[in-house]
Length: 350
Length: 162
Image (cartoon, rainbow over all chains, first blue to last red; front, side):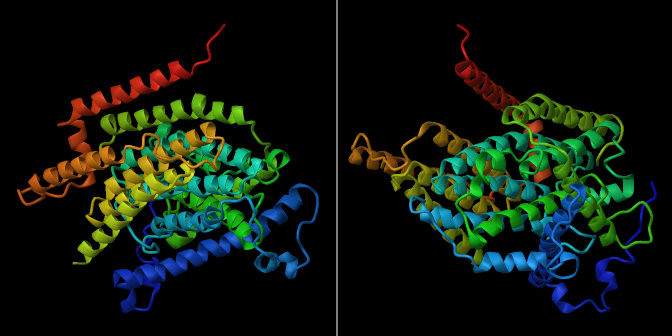
């Protein structure tokens, strides 16, 4: 595979030289890049809701939202204003502090992972040595607000939903971690940018260590769908059984934060999968700037998730657990062993 | 100087959260306060530069152990409103034990030579290498212990055929 040399058209290079002074200071760099990346992810997430509703309409031979603005494009703004104007109700039997704490915690843990997601060589907030662990740590913590919301609401549906969410979360975290270890073993680094740079030199991890790469990507994608509670893994908020999962008792913007962070989390997951396995900001040919490739791959995976959502049906709880423990966990262990053997016998890391 | 201030604030967080974990009568609140204490410990590792340890602390303790605890609470405790007191009521004995433990830790800390004796801050790669070379036996022994615990749990929880 040819490698795109995109040093000449990276983001920093496209800025007027000399580089603005604020970008050379760590805090200034963090503020500017953080604002850019946060804005990008939040805007994409907001309009992805519009896109998903139109897309679902097309798949189900109906129209979808088309009234507010041209082709319904202003629908996300209308929804946000509606949610903001609604009253935030707290059930009388609820644990009030925890009930109020849960939605902001969801938002915090989701957005914290954005700190290490690189959109291109320079377009990232911070390059941590342990970037991958940082993302996995915070997405693991996302179980807490879900659990707290379900328990604090003092409602049997929400409690069932949070029990399911925790059981599913701790089960699927194992194949997720193991499949994320595959790139780490091959590259020999925990930094996401290092992993992408390695793929720029040696080809995408999806293809090259032939077995573990592709299988690792599949397991990572499936397990992260389960972590993000997307269909076919949305047992915790199965609307035909549990009304609306842990969000039953929430209203107004307190409710709105849950679906919003779910979309942001799905988008971050797509970005992480494209950085770890699909070569990140490197494309198959060189003429497009790196950030275009990264965004394109991320949006493609994001689209595949929507596609699956409106094509597949939901698993039962026991099928979900069987899939994880009988198939994904042993397969992901095999993947890690395969990657280790590959490193020892074929291509070694320094 | 800034590091000392940050460490003191974090230590205060750990202390307060630990105290609340013991004192709050609600089992769920206790577990969540414990999570705050463990997350603060991870912040402490981060401040002194042990980034790998800090991430592992979050993944394993805050993410894993506490989640399992919450799961256990959910499956066993049905009456969340009951206050859990101190069942034995032997406060003096508890205080003596706590003080003895505190003295032990202070003695251990004061006798340790931190980085002064030619030690260096260990990076992630060196840590991994040390685990799989110098400390391989301890590493394997620990994993055998965990395996035994897991098998025991399966045996205990297995459905008995009539």
